[in-house]
Image (cartoon, rainbow over all chains, first blue to last red; front, side, top):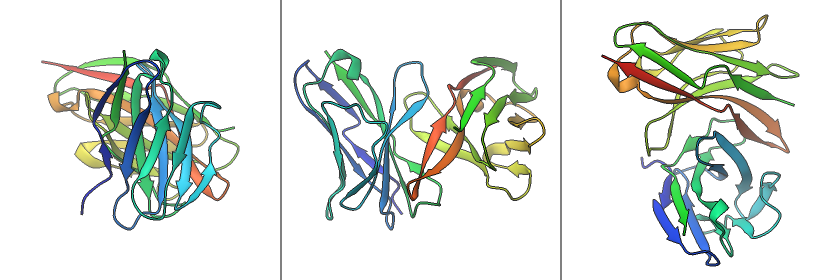
Length: 113
Length: 115
């Protein structure tokens, strides 16, 4: 039973480019969460999605960031026009429903040069 | 609002000695609390969880934590540290909101284990 999968594991982008981070939840899980970990900090909640719906995006920056979880395929976190401050580890977690614990993927480490 | 405070950013112990990582929580109602561990450049692994059942919770790798409502604490302990325990540990509180749940992380405690 594969765990939460994220790809790519490492992503390098130049300032102004777009970054697309993918997350495939565990089998049977339909709830996906995205968190960001800045250097030397804990994880901060960004967004919570169910299939085709954004449930809570209170942690998402107002501009340049978007997330989706389509009916088919992985969840995507998209960052447009990246800046150096976007350099961080982005973790995805999934759960079976809203009351079960979250299982984390290995993260995508984004470096903006 | 719910939050957790990890009282030590760094803890150093000798191999074979006890480990104590401290966490205090703030919550307006009975919280769900977790400890996660993160090894360098790896993802997060759930060590243990408290969800209003037994106050002493046993986790993986010999770790345990005790929920103390009177002290609003959820400290993580292990009787004897091993070199492989060196990692970053996060105390986490779960907030139920909008039909779902999101996790609020503490700032982390870096555990160093010396020979």
